[in-house]
Length: 617
Image (tube, rainbow, N blue to C red; front, top):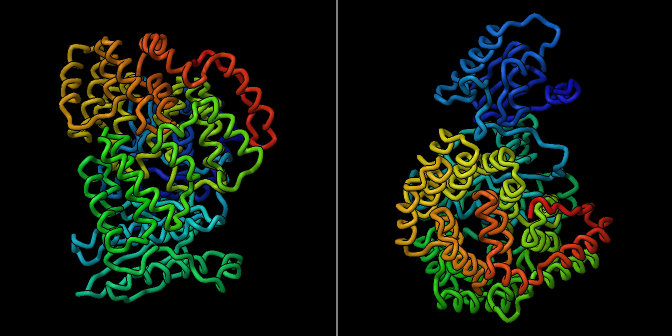
C-alpha cells in the first residue's frame, strides 16, 4: 500500500459497526465508551479498513506496514487478538475481524463504513434525519413517529441548498452521531422523541454537529393531536434556521413551504398510515397503503400529495407484483388528480405519463436523444433526470461502464432528489455486470448498513457471495431471509453456484406458487434449470409489459450478468425473441456508436467521456 495513501487514511475517521475510529488520536469509541489503542494496533486497523473487505495476509500486513522492521507473525496475531478484545468491550458479541483459514484477516464487509471518498461532493449543509423515538411505548403511534420524521424530511428536501438523508433504518440503535454522520456522509444529525398524553403530543428535537458531537440547536413542542401539520411546519422552519447563518438570513423572513399539503388532521393521519405501510414493500402492505391514501383523498379531495402516493403505490404494486388492470387504472386516475391539484414531482410529468400510457412511450433510442437534448438545454423541469434517463439507455445498450459513470454523476448532482430515484440501489448491479463482484458486495453492504431490514438487499448480496464462493457469508444472509420470493430465489442461486442444481426446482416451484412474483425472478430460475424458452418468455414479460418502467430492460441485462454465467446470458440474449425486442427499441451496433459520439459531444456538460466496452455486452 502506498505510504502517502496510508498517511492520509491515518488522518480520517471512519466507522466499524457501532464504533467510531479516530486514527489521528488512536481512539475507538461508542456513544458510551472510549478506548485508546496502541499506535501499532491502530495501524493494523486502518490497514484492514482501507482494504474495504478484501483479505489481508500475514505477508501483506508485514510488507505494507513494517518493511525493513523485524516483526514476527506472533506480533501480528497479538495485534489481531487485542483489536478483537477492544471491540468486544461494548458487550456485543460481534466478530468485526474475521479469520479466513490459510488466507488471512479482513474486517467483515457488512460492518465497515469507510470515510467519505474524494469523489463525493456533499456540502456543509447536509443532514440525516433520525427516526423519532417513541417514549410512550405505545405501538399505536409508531406510524406517527415514522410519519413525522418523514414529513420533516420531505419539507427539508424542498430546499435545494440542502442534502437530506433518511436514517429511518437506524431505529432503536443508540449510535454516536459521528458514526451516523459517517454512514450517511452527513454533517449534521436531527434526532428527536415523541410522547403521547391523551390527545396531546410532546416532541423534543435536537440538531447535532457530526464533527464533534456538539448540540447546536434543540427545542421542545407540546401540541394537540389535531395540530400535527402545524408542528411539522414549526420544526422544519426551526431546523432550517439553525443550520447556517446564510440559510437563516435567506429563509427566516419567508413562510415555510406547505409541507403537509392538507389542513385536515384526519386526512394527514390516513396519509401517514399509508406511508408507513408503503415502506414495507409487500403485496399486503401495498394494499394497506392504497386503502389509506384512498381514505385521505376522500376526506380531503384536494390533498395532492395523497393523490400522488396513491398513484405511486398502485403503480408499484402493478410493476413489482403484476397486479391487474384495476391497479393501472387507479394509478392513472390518481396521477391525473395529483397533477390537477398542483403536485410537483421530482421527475417530469411526461415520464409519469409514459409509465402509465403505453402509446406515449418512447423507445430507447428516442429516449436517449431526448435526454441528451435536455442536458444540453439545461431544462429546469428535467434537473438531473437526464442523467437517470441515460443510465436506462446505456444499460439497455450494454454499456455498463458508462452506465455506472452516469449513475454516479446523477447522485452527485445538486438537483438529485432522494425520494424519487433508486439510483444508489442500481449502482451495485452495474459493478456486478462488469465482473467487479467484490465492489458490488461492498456497495450492497453499505446499503444494508443504512437499511438492514430490507430483504431485497440481503438477497442481492447473498447471490454475489454465492457466486464468489463465499458460501458462509451467503448463508448468513439466507438466515435473515425466512420466506417469500427473495428467500426462495436467493436459495435457488445458492444451490446453483454450489453446483447443487437438483435443489433448484424446489425453489422454482415455490416461486410459481406465490400470488405475485416479478417476471425477472422467474426468468432466472427458468434459466438455472435450463429452460431457456420459458426464461425468454419471462424476459419479454419483464420488458414489454405496459406497467414496467424504462429501467427494467437495462436492469434485466445488468442483473442477469451479475447473477448468471455469461454462457446462459448469451443463450438468453441471442434468442430471436430478445433480439427482436432490441431491434424494436432501436438498439443495435450503429446506434451504440452514434450514442457514444453524441454523449462525447456534451462532455463539457457531463464531465464523462464514454468509450466502447464491447467486452461487457
